[in-house]
Every structure is written in C-alpha cells, then in structure tokens.
Image (cartoon, rainbow, N blue to C red; front, side, top):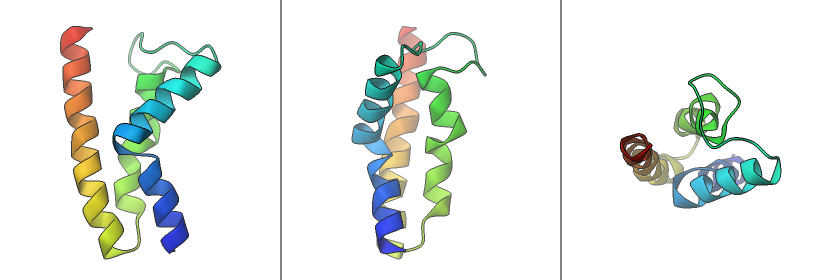
Length: 82
C-alpha cells in the first residue's frame, strides 16, 4: 500500500502537472479544447483529481490534500488565462 500511495502521490501536484503536459506533448495531445475531449487538461478530471481519494496511508492523504488543492488552483488560473 505504501508503494502504491507513493506512485499516486507522484502523479499529483506540481510534478504531476509537469508529467501530464510532458506526456501529452510527446503524444501530440492538445493542452485544452472543449470539456470532455482527450486533452491534457481533461486528464486532471479523468484521473488526477480522483487519486487523493484512493490513498491508503494517513501520511499520503495529508500530502495529497495539499497537492490536490494546488492542482485546483492551477486550473483556476489556467482557465482565466485561456
């Protein structure tokens, strides 16, 4: 469970955002188009935002809360700029 939590923690927050855009760019994926399309931003909703609720350990849940909030703030700013 600890290893699984560590993997999930790595997928969220600032590093998770960087990984999402790096992967999307490598695959030729759009950053954003319309909600529901297969874009890097949609990946936040399809996977990243769900990870904090799938953790096992108390320590991972505490770390995930802060990183989850960071991703929310990131998207708020992204939409303002878009």
